[in-house]
Image (cartoon, rainbow, N blue to C red; front, side):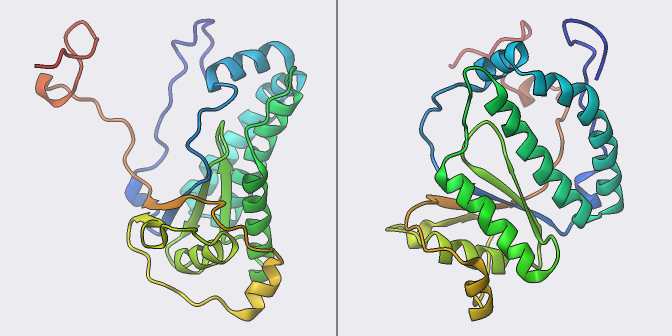
Amino acid sequence: MGEQADGKDSIARQVAPESHWPELRVLILVVSAEKKLTGSTVGMQTSVKTSPLLKFRAEAVVPARMAEMIRYVKERNFQGFGQLTMKDSNQFHATCLDTFPPISYLNDTSRRIIHLVHRFNAHHGQTKVAYTFDAGPNAVIFTRDNTVAEFVAAVRHSFPPESNGDKFLKGLPVKPAPLSDELKAALGMDPTPGGIKYIIATQVGPGPQVLDHPHAHLLGPDGLPKPTV
């Protein structure tokens, strides 16, 4: 975390190589590409100034959760990893609502995705998928490779694509999978056509890389972007 007021000694470190958990998959459910009413930077600055919950979260909750999350990743414990991911996302958005004036990044479709995830997990009796939301309505879903096809089918059932059915799924290929009548009933949701614009299927990638060769990056010696030729 660091101690300096300017934050220059606050450094992110990769806790495991991307090859550590090869079964882990990521689905990005794109709900909206529209510009947010409150930008991330301005929103966080306002939260720091006005949210008592954010101060409590930073001091009393985050340090322990960081240690817990690192342990779950190292153990490849998806149950713990998934539940903690969702709890922390929920608390982050609680601090947004605790901000004054309040900030609401989630929309109705975001909340329906949350509902879908919990119903899907309840049907299976375990945490098989987990959501997290940044400062916006789009969902990032963590799951494992053996669950991707069924959950994508559940998303298609709950949020039928309106006109881009052939382009609804981007990224890594996902084989079509049937959705059982039992799971359809367990989801308990009326379909919302067009609620999700498209899905990006991907997986965990490498962390930041240090590029020493001057031709390998887009910055000049002054640290500014190189001029176009």
